[in-house]
Amino acid sequence: MDFRQLKYFVALYEETHVGRAAERLCISQPALSQQIRQLEGELDVPLFHRHNKRLSPTLAAHTLYQHAVPLLDGLGRAHDALHAYRGQPPKVLAIGVLQTVNASLIPPLLEKLRERQPYLKVQVYELSGGEIERRLLAGSLDIGISFLPPRHAGLHGMPVYEDELNLVVAEDHPLKDFRKVSVAQAAEQPMMLLGEEFRTRQIWEEQLARIGRQPQVQMELNQMNGILDSLGRARLATVLPGRAQALRTGQGLLWKPLSDPRVVLKVGLVFRDAQRQKPMLELIDDVLADLEG
Image (cartoon, rainbow, N blue to C red):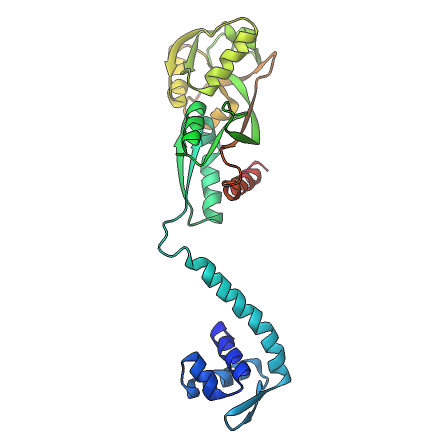
């Protein structure tokens, strides 16, 4: 039994006449009769009492009709709903992400999004936190994954996970044997840091300002990969989120959580219009919750 047979059956049930039903369906009378006989054979029940070309439904036909009409109506509504997508390009979702997020979260996120929304085109841009916010406000990004809370009042945030700031040093660094390093101890170390536009750098400077210190900056790079690859040779330290360990560079480095105080980093979805982005926010939040779980 298929939807075409149900459509033929409903027409014949409502017309109770082979000729009128065939005319309504724009098919020949023999073709209609053949389909109905085939349906009766598959169901193994008679659906009509035949009197020449006039028919009267059986009790089985009454039952089938009550189930067939909602099914055909639902199919018609689905067809109408999908009609709006004909000729339309795939939905595009532009996401801005921090470098640490891109390294640790984006590959499995994209895999899960593809499983759930195979026709969704996802564009991922690796950006600083400040640039993510600027592009969200300009409308060139749909959603950001960045540090919370957003710095701009026109943006909103939805928590996803917590990270913490680590001091990263080479295996021969003077602090190599410390399990944790205090903020005051780290402040003494000559640093290779991300540029001032990066939120990780800004958060570090805010922590130092609380104890009346300034960062000991000897080198600046705008890529974490470059920093991690260079630390050992430059004999410098850096501060990065713990999840940056997922980057497959800078092997042989030691990651030491900062303490006194512990520097917590809150990461989440950042967006401008919660109502307009609600479906995508719920989708991404659900996928991320599944990954974190």
